[in-house]
Length: 262
Image (cartoon, rainbow, N blue to C red; front, side, top):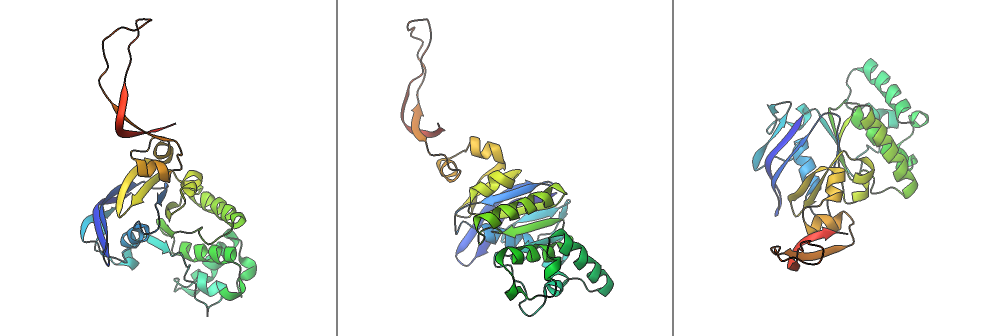
């Protein structure tokens, strides 16, 4: 289990503030928010590429806040994929594996799993966007990470390839892979996520079961980001005890205070 506790992290003048959430083994978690919200900074801090100013990162009850990136059981797949252009597909997939026999077997298995066996001798420049995405995922999985961290994994794909990649990510999660996926597209959370967090200006606005986030947003920003179009500003005042026809009671609303979904 991954516990993020009161995490603060800085990137230049930008600052993540008081981020707290938990990821259970086997869950698919989407962290969604607009550009500049701090999603990538959060992923890089979890991966160990950034050291937090305050707070803790716990994994299986062990404090890994100061643990080096290479010693964390996580793999971060960057938005630009970061494939090595001078290496073949096979060399890219097996890059992190030092043992030659194990590397050959792992590359074979992952190439079949991600349907790129026919491309093993090619260079990344010879591949389509969808093929590059699959190879980058295969390389990420070569380390057998406990948690796969994905930075906007679908943003550069057309609609057909996006659907194809979502199906692949869904199958990976169904096979037990824990995934944390950041995006600016809340529809990806609808299609993939067990849990969703909404991030705005370095703060976690709301975190929980995806359906509950979408059905019961806690604030206007979350409601609007979730795609709710009908938001009413209302306020509450006390009920009266005055009887009206039918012996019913009435509740009056006025002013501007809370947001309601249609």
